[in-house]
Amino acid sequence: MSLQTWWLFVMMTFVVSATPGPNMLLVMSSSARFGFRAAVSTMAGCMTALLAMMSISAAGLGALLHAFPAVFDALRWAGAAYLAYLGIKCWRAPVPDNADGVETPRLTERPAKSGALFRQGVLVAASNPKAILFAAAFLPQFIHPEMPKLPQFAILLATFAVIEISWYLVYAGSGQRLASYLRRAAVLKAFNRVTGGVFVGFAAVMAAVRN
Image (cartoon, rainbow, N blue to C red; front, top):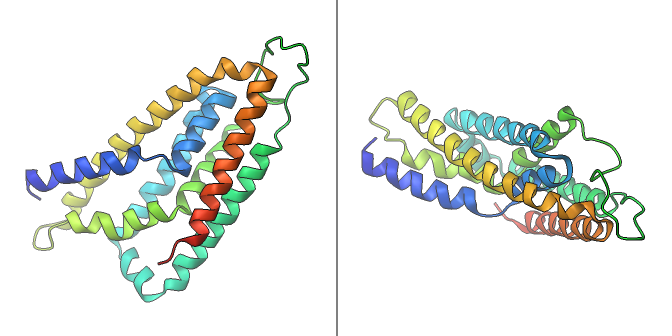
């Protein structure tokens, strides 16, 4: 792999990762609602799924999806259903009774468990068509077929991980900035409705994607 090819991968990955999507929204929402430490569990779940998908890509995920488009469709519909579920869950999330407008000491009725946030991250990332296509179609384009593939794959995987995690931290930091405002019941309710609506919107887009 040439240095020019690597830089092209860096620039394109930087843009793709920065684009707001289900993964980034989930990280930001987790940070805003439950705190930065909880968001780390969400980040870990997302990264676990993405790195697993890219590892499978090295073993021929692109060929599998091309030969069996029904596999892509199944993942797409499963992802759309799960995002719709998350959207409805966010929309209906309870808000502390705060009629007088005094700030509440916590954001939700109970703290989220790390395992649940990790699983959410895995499921959202693993069923995201953008992530699937990135692993199956985009990543292999940067691997020179006449050079040893494993070192090239390792470099690309490490580069992707650094860029993706960096953007996770940016979105989690944005969620932290929102946290102080979400202590007001009216703002938290609006945040829940907006976040839930966006997740449902992502579900609709995902359902409309064609292989």
